[in-house]
Length: 394
Image 1 (cartoon, rainbow, N blue to C red):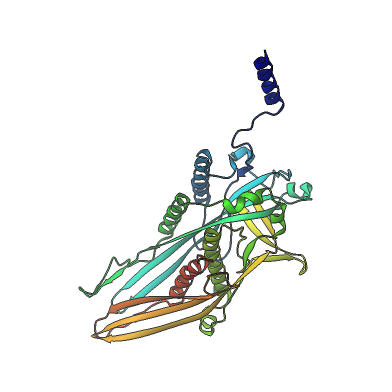
Image 2 (cartoon, rainbow, N blue to C red):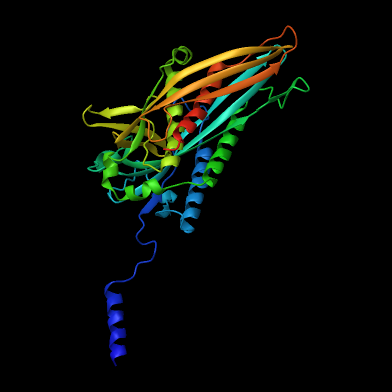
């Protein structure tokens, strides 16, 4: 009789306090349609088909990870009827959205030429950021539903991803005195777009860490930027760099350097990152209570993503560029390009400044000459160096 009473007591407790499954405590994140960052940096046009392919690749991968229990949150993939758009805005402050955002879709195009032949290459760069957002507080729903008014979101953090690969890479064979695998025509837009999609698949197959986002999905401090990191400036102190990169080209380079650094830094530290606030990003608000606004494009209209000033600003500096041509005799020439990049503040075991060197050796027939695009070579070196600088041990 005593055992029967004990069993009844257990059932009563279970009814009053039902047991939760392992995933019940996870926040729910709704994956939204892909956004694009429309600016002059992006040379590769993202049409609707490319956008949908990107959505599908990212959505399928995240759903696969969630089903395997590899994500710190539950995933809901929005259907076409529930897409977050200018005509349908959810004002529930607990709603968390994940926007796959195409931040970078560009290429670094070069042509190395001599008096005999041209060799074209194109380094395609794909940068995808997974933006975790919540609706802005005190949102005026009347304005949102009016045609032409953007959706306004508050950024919680990002997972920035980037991949790059060169099309038409040729190599000089010293034993035969000839270049091999020469791409004698400029790389077409179709080839670049195909490589972009391939890079998106590649980056989504890699290990993606969301540990920096987990606690902040429920932590209001993230909305205030108290424990966030952001590249807030990319200086160009090098006189040579200021001569070569001017105007819009300089601003584009700053953004790309900041983005490559951000991707490597987040992957290494697992910290909460904001997109780099350089290269023409719009600054809104007062100087005392400043905020950055990133204006993005969706299939249904504009989406404004707002972020407060970061708790931990990071400053980068293109501190040096140099080049030299070495004549080794017998018509063999080696062109050297070197870049330097610095970071402040310096953390732990980090080096404040790193450098990277590029060598190109060619044997030319008598009476011929060779030219290379210094700006494109320097830009490619700086992007690789930005990843190395961000990925240092702390």
